[in-house]
Length: 220
Image 1 (cartoon, rainbow, N blue to C red):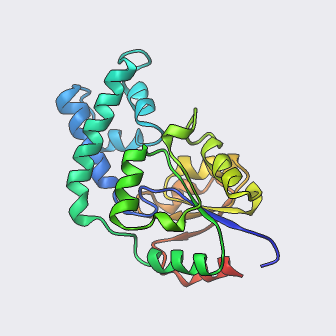
Image 2: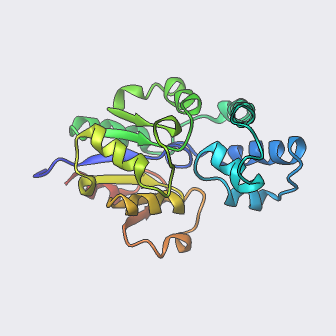
């Protein structure tokens, strides 16, 4: 490699295939507890950014106090973790990909809208923390994706120019955040179809998982 590059990973739907469990947990809380009367599809469309941002999109600003939103978020995350833990594993091929990146001395970060509680859940249970030089969660940013702050902060902590950072994402809003940060992006088609990303010129390629041989070009 003639220039240092870095890899920045979203977490949910990108490292672990867990978005349906988030959807179920949010659908239950929003409808059973908060009486929002939303379909699963309507919930899925709101599942980006911070938990408090989701609640504000659904109910409007100032509907809940900050403490109420924090309590709702923790209840939702506990329900998600309990349901997903028996199925917790990395997306196919990612373990080998992380190991290869480490051997190639490519610095890596996580840039996620998840709260630390959920990031720790994945990293600790799957013993992954040692791979990542930086972790940017919802707690570290003011405005979440598609704002570029998450990825720009990760690049700064990796001491790598944004243009040299390759983002791994599964959601259109995440790809948009990478575009806004000036970063190319590899899209995981775990939750969304290719057609949903057509307007983003920063997509390098689409992969179903990390066993795709096309990823070898990232190490050149």
